Amino acid sequence: MANTGIGLPRAIEVRRRNPLTDFLTRMVRTKPLGTASAVIVLVFFCVGVFADVLAPYDFNQQKVQLEDGTNQRFQFLAPPSLDHWLGTDSIGRDLLSRLIHGARISMLVGVIGSVFSLFVSCLIGLPSGYFGGKFDLLVQRFIDAWLVFPDLILLILLVSVTGAGLWNIVFILGLQYGLGGSRSVRGAVIGIRQNVYIEAAQATGATTLRILLRHMLPNVAAFLLVLVTTRMPGMMLAEAGLSFLGLGVPPPAPSWGGMLSSSAMTYMYTQPLLAIWPGLALSIVVYSTNMFGDALRDLLDPRLRGAMGRY
Amino acid sequence: MSTYIIRRLLLAIPTLLIVTLLTTASLRIIPGDAIDVLIGQMDLSGKEDRGVLRAQLEEQLGIDGPIYVQYVRWWANVLLRGDLGEAVIMGTNVRDQILARLPVTLEIGILALLIALLISFPVAIYSAIRQDSIADYVFRSVAILFISLPSFWVGIMVIVFPSIWWGWSPELIPPKLWEDPWGNLKAYIIPAAILGMAINGVNMRLMRTMMLEVVREDYIRTAYSKGLTERVVVFRHAVKNALIPVITVIGLNVPVVIGGSVIIEQLFGLPGMGRLAVEAAFLRDFPVIIGVTFVFSLFVLLIILITDLSYAWLDPRIRYG
Image 1 (spheres, chains in turn purple, yellow):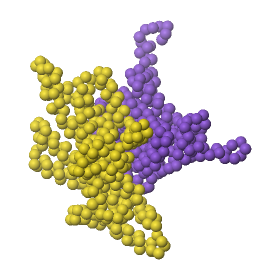
Image 2 (spheres, rainbow over the protein chains, first blue to last red; image 1 turned 135 degrees about the vertical axis):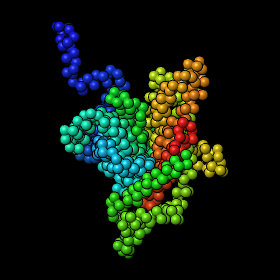
Image 3 (cartoon, rainbow over the protein chains, first blue to last red; image 1 turned 90 degrees about the vertical axis):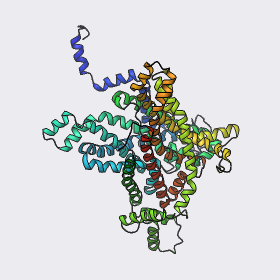
Image 4 (cartoon, helix red, strand yellow; image 1 turned 45 degrees about the horizontal axis):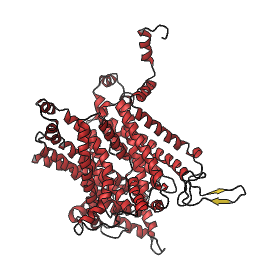
């Protein structure tokens, strides 16, 4: 290519480019803010994954063993120092370590929750859009009713029944958002149902399951990716909100929302850093995910521009 | 029009039936467990018979017998006596509790909606007219920021930092609206503004998109080509037609306001319905939680109905047969 300089080989080469690198270049070029946000989200994701390695102390650790074998308790509400970069909380736990482990909880809820919600959305949305008719009507009535519940109130009702806990929250949030998202998946499926390749698949005698999974699903994949990134920030905020109310991930787990709960507020007057860091971390992650989702939506699905999720 | 209203009302009934079925059935998700927790909380001195107590509690919660019986009984109570049952732990009638707390939530909600609309409507119009200008970009970024900031964190900052710096803190017990309207407003305006902020972010984006569609309509082009000034085009033609999107947005906001008020009420210690739900969730007082969920859902359903009907009233082009 370099020595000929004529058009034909270049054109062939362009066609052979990896779609992923192609997409990434396009993203970096046209959406610098979105790319920066994606990097930030990725950083927080890695922090969550490697929390055990990165955190200087355990999230629940209140004392350290000295060389002579005795234990030394950490100071309560200590200001930032070389030992504790962000200081300690009201019972002497290292704030930085708790923040780092908090990233794990937020990312767990955001990523696993949205993947689960995607599964629920597809499970309901694909057949509902594909079959239509009475089945669709019945399912949509049910979804209608479900969406009448205000999010947080329904979450409180469900949490009060199942009890608080990380996996309960992930399950409930995934279900709640998944049912809401099934509406969008259904819409996307109805949009492509009339296409000739679906008809062709039906004509060649493909089973319904095969049509749904091999022909429908890949064609709504880009849309689903956008759906996931727009759901993630909402889920992370909802988990933090529930934990703030004391109905989310129970202590001593270091949820960012829980670190801002009313019982922690008492100590913020003496150590304001306790109020700033968890909220700042949460805001940065949620903001970046939102920006990333926005950029992704513009790139992948121009029809959706400006449409919003429920949060 | 009247046939449309009737049809719309009839369509709301199945939705309401499913909603209540879901709430009453929610206690059955983990059968027995809810009862066990309640018995565990009751601090028994060992004298009472657990079996008797369980039966008693099941009857009180209305979860003795098959689920359809419970469901019909629950509806009969609501329709015939307007009764939502008795609280198990909080010890009062659920309806009375909710009625006592309703005004607080209503006031915060309405104030928050007003604040959000007063800011987002003009901003959205400006953003749409000057699409892709620097101001448009700034507003769009601010909108995402508003959506991303957790309201409880903003609230904590507002409570903690002024108190540290100037010794100022928000009023804890708001005076009654009819006794001291000014003092009442002062107590509610900050929580409402924080709640409004989150809605504002959503609204700025939604309304901008909707306004962009209005601005591209033929009649706007005609108005421009007639030689009308931009001011006249915007205020006489665009804004009037943007009222429909505003109604849509208000309808979408209501569930968000309800969810947000739970957190704001808890943070500022305001005795509203959201706080009632949280208190009940802590005590696992199920009749109270179910009552609150029911009232909120009924409210959302009503708002959806009203927004649907107001389209026809606002826009003569929409006629329902």
